[in-house]
Structure formats: structure tokens, C-alpha cells
Length: 445
Image (cartoon, rainbow, N blue to C red):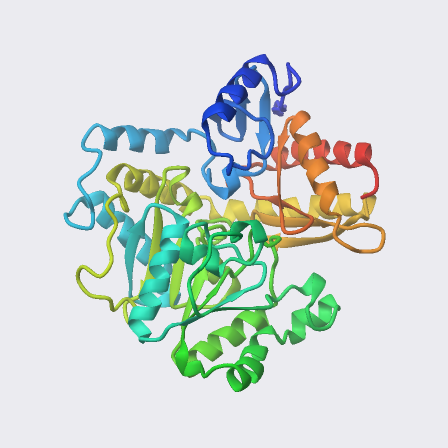
């Protein structure tokens, strides 16, 4: 009989070693850091994270959807070690090396069946990919206006935070920001902006059409719009699965008016949905896909993957000293090989995860909505009147941590489940048992 591993809390966190390190941290690090809960990591292995006081935690958040192959996957670690032993840097903007070429080939091959011929620009991060995509779209179209959506999160650099619309603190006192950025409602079936009925929204979503019927008739011409930036599944905004009609309408509008459709898949990509990208899962083809987070299991790298017909900027118009670093490329190539081999497993485990959560929802009806696909799942918590249970999810996060389960919230009152993609059904059961204990202990939202 298989032994099921469980988290173990030997010393209530934060323990003495953790407290000492937290004090040192607070003395020297930026006050802008969030520090969600007092986890001081010693090391990680597979689905588990270990703190400096000997506690072990089951990881259901993967460093915010980053450690896609789990912690310290041996193939990824070996790839990093081998690459580091050869050379650490040479600058992919100016010179050539095989690991960078191979990564661009791998990414292009994954999207070729639906995007056709593409070219790839490698970055250090997701937010840098967003910045580059803004430049690319403006360069290609010779237009300036960019459309984004309410609830969006695209990063923390200046162009990216201008596209953001999830938390006011991300923008406060940093202006003036990038001009000519416009935000429209995102398709949110559980809390529809136009008619608060989930089924109606899923089948009749008008968010996309409002752009053409309202904004293009009353505010500005579509000929001025360079790009539409959208998360095909919204991340920070609440792990929201939009209506497919919404995404189809955006695709049709972009085709009609020569606008570049950019899918920000920094969180939804690299196997998270059970396909390499959510674009494939949802059956919608963008002009540009942005990737980062899980692409290299934790090493810092991102990518702009664009149709060749759209990546028309010229020599020297964009670059990055560290983007496509050879060690990061090696980690990314190893990661893609691992994830590519377990995509069916991700879908299967994701379906099991959703079904188990729905069982919990019956027991705890203040879980108002469960949504997602693959291993990108959100559970939205509500108060008795149906309003978001904002404070509740914070308490749930903290209690789960103290019981050995790592969770993160998003949106106003949603817990995101974005575990390493190697998670097993047994891991799901263990984690949801802890979640059930927490919900029982906390009571109704």
C-alpha cells in the first residue's frame, strides 16, 4: 500500500530560526515587499517546501505558478548545473548559442499548429515581456492606443502597471503612467458586469461587443488602436474563466480592424491548463503570446512569441542584456521537455481536483464559485449576502499555512490553486483535507 506523504509542523511557525531571519530581513529589505506569511524557506523537494525550523509544507501555490516541475526537479537542476559549468553569460541580443536557439524553436513548435510561423524574443521576466509587446504592437501598427481590462495584472514596470487594473496600490503615486491605455470590463460570468446571471453571461457575453458598439462609436476610432492585451484566464483578478464568446469577439474585432491581439499567458501558460498554452485549451488564436513564470521552473526568463507577420520591428529596435540567459534557457528547455510529457496527467489531475473541490463546496456553501481548467483553479468565497468574503480568505491563507498547506489568494475573495504540475491525486486529497479542516474551524465566511 502506497504511503501518502503529509506535511509536518514540528514548531509552530514562525519558529525561532525563522523569527531571527525575518528580523534581519525587515532591517534591510524594501518595505514594498508583501511577505504573505512568515515562511522562511530552507529547501524544497517535489511538492514540498521545508522551512528553517524543520517544518514541511504541501505547496498548492508553486511560488505563484512558477515552480511548474516542482521544487528542485533533478532534470532541471542538472540542466542548470551543466549550463553553469560551460558559460554563465554572453548576451543573446548580440551573439549566438544553441540553448537559446533550441528554446525559441521549442516555443515556436508548440504554437505552430494554431499560430503558424512565429518568432520569439526572450526576456528576463513576464513584466519585461509585456513591455516588449507594447513596443512591438505600436511599432508594427504605427498606432498608439492600447486596450486592457478591469481586474488585469500584467506586471510592475511602468507600461505593465498602466495595463493593470487589479489593485490601486500598484499604481498609486507612480504617475504619470503610459498614455492612451483604456480599460474595459472583463468577462466575469459569476459577477457579470451587465447582467448578473452566470449562464447568461457564458452564452451571451457582451464585453467584447461593447468595445465595438460603444468605444469605437463614441470614444475613438479602431484605426488608432495598436493592441488588445488580455489574459485568456485572468490571474491576479480572481482566476476568472471568461466566456468563450468574449475571447472570440475580441479575435473578430482585431481581425476586422488590424489590431494586434496579445494573450498574456505569464500565469496560464506552460502546461497550467493541460495544454502548453491556454490559447490551445480555449481554441482562440492570438497574434502574440507572452510567457514567463513556469517556463523555467523558477529560473528568471520570459518570452514574447509572435506571429512572424507581426514581429516586424527591425535590427536594434529592442534588446535585453540578460534576456535568454544560457543557464535560464537550459532550465527552460528541460522544463518544457518534462511538462510536454505530462500534459494528459495535468488534465486528469485537474479534473479530479475540481471534482473534489465541488464536494467541499456542498459541505461549505460559502464557497460561492469554483472555476478553472487543468491546474489553474479558483474558489471564490462569499458572505451570506453573496458579496465577496475579502477578509475571510486572508484568515484562511494564514490558518492553512499554520497547518502545513501553502495557499495564495487573488481577486477580492478567491483562493487560487496553482500547484506544481507534478501534483498527484493523493497530494490533492491531503491538501483538501487540510483545507476542509480550516473551513470547519473558521466557520461561515
